[in-house]
Image (cartoon, rainbow, N blue to C red; front, side, top):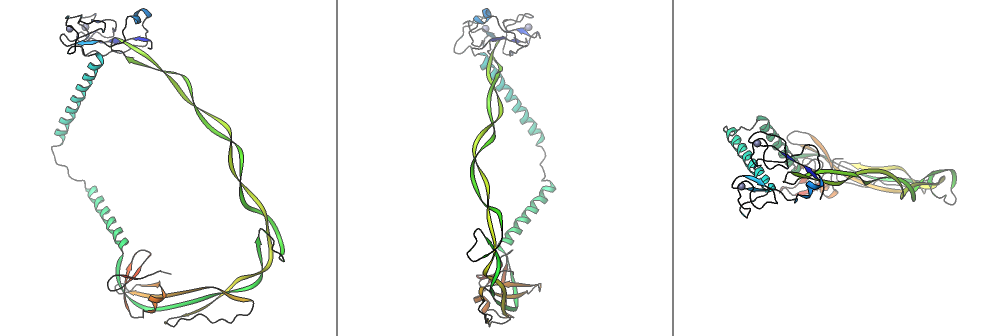
Length: 355
Ligand SMILES: [Zn+2]
Ligand SMILES: [Zn+2]
């Protein structure tokens, strides 16, 4: 048990204040401590060892018959002689709890009454809230529409195609690499970043630890006119630095070779194109030092919106493109970035790309 500290109380009958916790009766009017009493401290005055030895450490008990507190050491009420028993003798802490509950209930009742008083008139929704809700509804409708897309009737105004072949030329050109191929003509070398090595390195690391620094002191109401001093260890966070071995990524340079050597190099592109359905690859007659590289083909149409007359160019797959002719009516679902060509049932025939 911690050291005992003197408590004090106030008398509600004669307004005598700061009465010594050792006194059961008010020195001003002679009334015994009643349910209004709540002990408090005035600075820290320790009880002498002699005084402390008389204490049981248990709170005073309350006599329901004459409304006064009695020390734990007494089994009959000092004021009226009523015996302490199952139905007589709630302790100081239980009495404080009952007091707190009563006060909380009163506060709740007051709040309820205030609410009933204020709630007389019906509240109107503020105008800005109505506007906000309308704007939100608009945004939701807009995003749903742009997600599902909008069907538009259009007319094909033209079709076109393009087929291209890249031509590569065998050339003597500068290249680079981490090795010099046999037969290559070295131009220069340079140390350049090649990769990272993981190296275990001593690194200064900031750390923290909890260090006990004295005690925090608090006081607990014993309910008998004394308080108990309670000491709990107080901890502070201390920061310090320490070396630790950690993996560190270290850039490693190696020798890079720049050299002249023979290689196939992209030289130019041969293209065939037209505005009909007769597609073909460009005819090539290549000398020995040239060859075909990458091939590419695109199939396009320009459509005109029947309502706005706005024209849009789309690329699409060859099969669908072959079936379309200038003057054809088509239905297109415009869907932010991935428009689609639909058939009469609204099913998707082709995905359309804007070039
Ligand atoms: Zn008094
Ligand atoms: Zn009594």
